[in-house]
Image 1 (cartoon, rainbow, N blue to C red):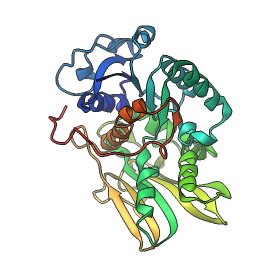
Image 2: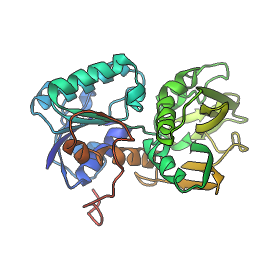
Image 3: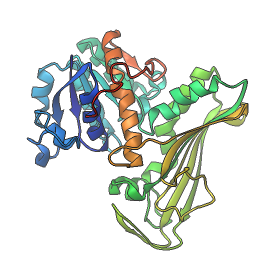
Image 4: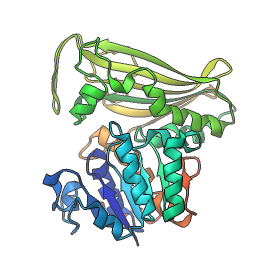
Amino acid sequence: MMTTVVWGTGNIGRAAIRAVEAHPELRLAAVLVHDPEKIGRDAGDLGGLGRALGVAATGDIDAVLAARPRAVVYAASGDIRPDEALADIVRAIRAGAVVVTPSLYALYDQRNAPPELREPVLAAIEEGGGSLFVSGVDPGWGNDVLPLLISGLGTTVDVVRCQEIFDYSTYDQPDAVRYLVGMGQPMDYEPPMIAPTVPTMVWGGQVRLMARALGVELDEIRETLDRRPLESTVTTRTMGEFEAGTQGAVRFEVQGIVEGEPRIVIEHVTRIHPSCAPDWPVPPDGVGAHRVIIEGRPRIEVTVEATDEDGNRSAGGNATAVGRLVGAIDWLADAKPGLYDALDVPLRPATGRLGRKRP
């Protein structure tokens, strides 16, 4: 079995602990944490398993990597600390590990990533013999392998549209929701995540990845943005009150332009309450969904609803993204050392996991 480390225990890390524990080819060897209060806690507790795994969380990065783990699931955030995340990941690769992560947006399309990102990774691979696979948490499969697979069912394809449609009222990440996305902020506040050029930085790689797979050249990548205020004050279960007149919904698109027309589109529609922007697309049950629409002949629409952690839809999306990453580890371990993307790494059946006891 391949010794595997989970680095970080936030929303992604919790799901990663469960995914590693469930995988028949992996053994959870260590859990790395930054918060001193988590040091010493059992991985089963941190992962929400309700039982001990006998692996105590540690903050000793040097000791964990010195043990030469075969794989690392890097689940620490790269949103506001991309340089630190890159340095951590390079350390793990240099130690010979296969690393899977959602944390470096620019490496979703690794072939077109900036040299300042590619070169340290490639140098670490050459030195240590590790590998790196980066895929998103939107989830990544919803913006690459799923739309590409479905596109192959069409006779003609005019537009490939990938949507994330979510109600954030049950999402327990106030910093991301209030400050990165801007929910509950004045309408003149510029949320960092949707500031001009940022959506392209985050999701543009997935647009380019799909264009490459579909064999088309992009003229450019464009962004659109719409925001709506709350008409009345709302109170959420996990994040408290959001006042009337503040931002209550956001809708943006990252568009791949082909011959002057948007042909490959990643769209996000997010609300803090269902009452805001009711004319925008809504998920079937009002909570959250990922949707792929192939405009063409025939028109094809596929909606995916994933739930985890007692019915939490956001946690379900995280869990499927993590499942894609963790499920790739054994394939990467058998492949030659390298830098991989979603077009390189196959999405495979859950071999050996059907009917296994839930972790």
